[in-house]
Length: 376
Image 1 (cartoon, rainbow, N blue to C red):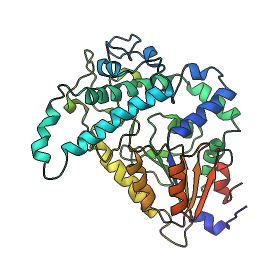
Image 2 (cartoon, rainbow, N blue to C red):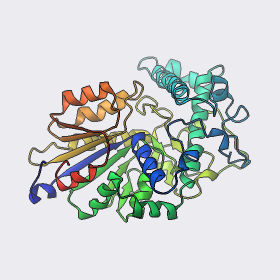
Image 3 (cartoon, rainbow, N blue to C red):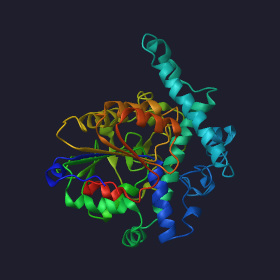
């Protein structure tokens, strides 16, 4: 058991990086506590499985994942009957093509000559599928969000004592940390909704003003709550004009209610590298930069203790560069905890090589102990 004194606690900082594993963990505990059939309503592992149940905002009919609505995704093989492996492989293909395409189009020295390529997507089925994926994911996760009411969420928070993160968030009120920053690559709102229900103050960087003593949330891949500040066109359907998807951070507002009515949110599909698609996602630049600044500040003072928690990150080859950027900014002396029941071997090796105070935990059951200055 590792202990720190009270003076150390007052100067500590926490930097938490969340991936899909956080949401999976939450839903597993929710299933065991409140609704054993929640997996029939929400599936964040196989993102195409429930796609035929999602309604389109323009006609309110189910069948979003269909040839009618997502012709290119469907043609490439996106089906509700896909296995997890089939779904993930297709998503990875689409994202790999998009990442490489934007790198290609923005290559220094050839940028001017290649820019016109973005004005036409004729024959570029993977890039069209990428646009469909952005719109589809907004509606998929908005539907998931509405599948758990505020009442049921509070019920879970009252009963789900076995969920380690609940202990962690509850202890934040003790203000034992000088600063807590959470970088989350999830589009969902479970984190924000849970903090709100627990009366833990927070703000979303880039879209809200900072609040002293509040948890800072950074979402470099966007969120279903990021909404373009424009009125919805009731005749809207998925368009393949890139200009309709480009937004600066100043053009976005936060919305937490009625998200399914908006034709699209602002997000980067899973495993997308926000640094490589800046031309179509300029809003992400400031968020990515802020995350890097905080990562560099964590543990830079030898006197100051810093705790870093990495939870549920996939470390796919297509998003590796973005994760590595944060890891490379950190002081190697930070207290680093990686939570994952089946950690990727390559990421485990990387963390072992960089951080001398590296600990792997197979579950989040003991994560609350970090706020006591100990690992149980």
